[in-house]
Length: 94
Image 1 (cartoon, helix red, strand yellow):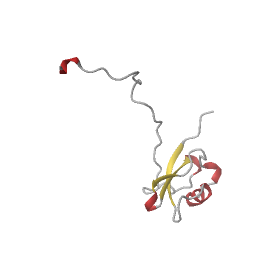
Image 2 (cartoon, rainbow, N blue to C red):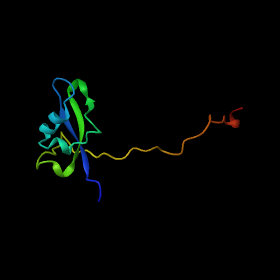
Image 3 (cartoon, rainbow, N blue to C red):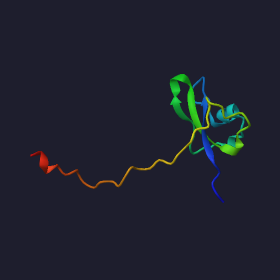
Image 4 (tube, rainbow, N blue to C red):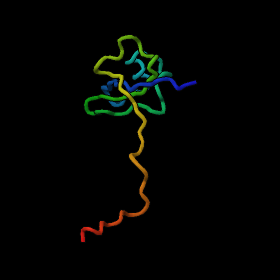
């Protein structure tokens, strides 16, 4: 079975970081449809903006407007192999 598709959505917090339950209520979804391991991540805490990861199929119609998301959540990976040891100086600079 394939993993369910998830999206990132923004939520607001007026008195600090919202709980998962508060974020779920803002989005109109059951709290169990949010990724608890992802948590509530600050985007701009001073402005009260936070991100949560939610099952895409749990969002009610109209929940995904331009301000709140959804946003893609691509996997993060390195750009290439890790180099072992310090870089060798370029002999052409001497």
